[in-house]
Amino acid sequence: MHDPDPPADPDDKTAWRRLGLARRQALSRAEQLARRRGWRSHGVDAVTSSGAAVVSLYLSRGQEPDTLGLAAELERRGVAVLAPVLTDGRGHGVHEVSWGRYRHDRLREGLWGIPEPSGVAMAASELASADVIICSALWADRAGYRVGIGGGWYDRALLHRRPDAPVWAMVDTCEVVAALPRDPWDVAVDAALTPCGLVPLGPKGSVE
Ligand SMILES: Nc1nc2c(c(=O)[nH]1)N(C=O)[C@@H](CNc1ccc(C(=O)N[C@@H](CCC(=O)O)C(=O)O)cc1)CN2
Ligand SMILES: Nc1ncnc2c1ncn2[C@@H]1O[C@H](COP(=O)(O)OP(=O)(O)OP(=O)(O)O)[C@@H](O)[C@H]1O
Image (cartoon, rainbow, N blue to C red; front, side, top):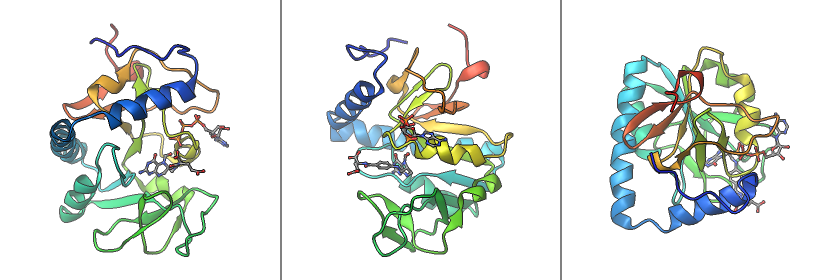
């Protein structure tokens, strides 16, 4: 696979973040739609084949890989969906990682335009009930390391996953690169969920 040119300083997470956001912003409407269709159909297939009864995913905004169609379809199929809750419901941010049960007709706008469940908020430890975890990322590398939006939310959240629950980062195929900068707190994911399907990363990924 041909990697996109890395930032001038490939050890700088912020530069990777800026590059990733700019590349997503530059996508045409047609490219976005094509990717969205792929993510949705492969997302449903991957979750269904995993046999998961409970799935945790982020609720996308703007140019992020779209999870809203996937969440609605999983709900329709009887899969329980957990999504991040960033506010207390009165517009104030919550500091601890917290989760809500996704229902397509019970959403509110949380922080920074991110939709969130409006029902009862659950503690970070609730992630242990998830059989599959789909997290946000701007980039993922072959070893499973990711660069996200930069709050460290998922690095904190993933400490509560069950060790047997696979973690998938939702990115485009061209957002899976050879190597990204790593910090001591970074938690590696098991696969990239791309519009072309699951790409195993880390020890289970193919060695190139
Ligand atoms: N849709 C979505 N939900 C998510 C994430 C995500 O990346 N996308 N997160 C992934 O971890 C967690 C939330 N973390 C986030 C951290 C920062 C920003 C953000 O937009 N920050 C603003 C600046 C905020 C400020 O003014 O302080 C920005 O980057 O412009 C968004 C989500 C959980 N939920
Ligand atoms: N387990 C943790 N406990 C406390 N702080 C943490 C933890 N993990 C990460 N952080 C903090 O979060 C900040 C951002 O981390 P990083 O740059 O790796 O974000 P990211 O993984 O790209 O973003 P995100 O997880 O929000 O998508 C760092 O400054 C770090 O100190």
